[in-house]
Length: 407
Image 1 (cartoon, rainbow, N blue to C red):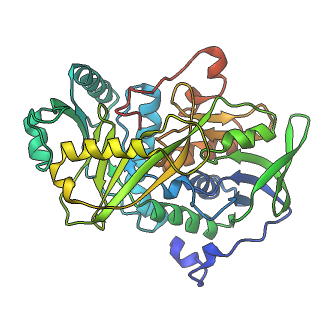
Image 2 (cartoon, rainbow, N blue to C red):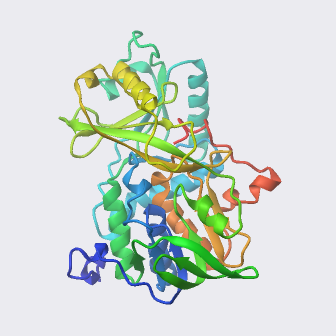
Image 3 (cartoon, rainbow, N blue to C red):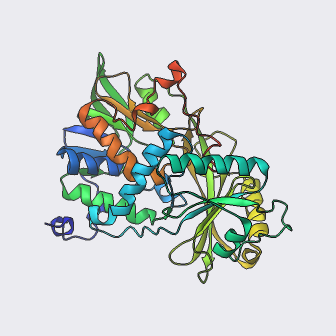
């Protein structure tokens, strides 16, 4: 039986808040991509269907609705390449898995090099990727000019293009389709999706979390899994756990609808701008993380201003485009810019956070790995390097700056 055959007839069923039951085997906190994916894989792959996903706002209305949809796995370190490549492979079969469209487009991701340091880092990463079995190539400026004709590969820009790395299997997907696809599939398997349900605290007994206190009442739990991007440190604080996280705004924007002019994703480390063209035609551009710490979904104007100046210099044709809207998400960042996935110092509590700007591309991969971790009460082998105890042992992954803009 196809998943779509098991869906309720009412088209708006996802938007009607489920009434939470008194207790669940697993309570997942965070109704974004990671939370919904975790709930789906718990039900579909581990047979755990008495699951609730609690979301303080609306379904996938946080970072999942505020990302730039880029998917890739060309990370330098073995640990990061492992979990992101696992995710990329799941992206390649996700439409069949969920029986719905997510508009996954493997148009490739190009990371530009502008100076000798960029070249050395890029070639090092290509070699590391190839040793890990990933599709990675080094392109000359001439090859880049053929791949992206609208990109200025002359010596005129302040940051001339001197080469770049390319991952052909990388690409983009439509973020809302991904969220709704996981939500529909999880709901069809018996998962409750509870919107407008803010977590306000926990009830514990010794080393066990007994219940989750929410704005809609107290919910008992066999296990609790945190997956609320940008706010996990606050939730963990209710458990008396201090996580090494800082929350920062991350800005992006889209243009008006344009004719298709860009067939791949282009990223630049030196000028810190990345751009793709969405399925409907709008340009999607992202900037770097704002330096200030905060939970407000807004950012500094100068960050967007510098981003646009860099983009127009690299793509002169973009100077004729108009900005349609801008936004900011809230990302949580660890000191080593790698995620935390694993157990908390409780018998039945788990954490998934710290993805910074890499959360969307990890969605199916970390969903499956986190679900396995929660189901078996121990870290999945791909999650083990990202355990919380690495901050006491000194075993840091340190992906920052080693993964092409660290996205």
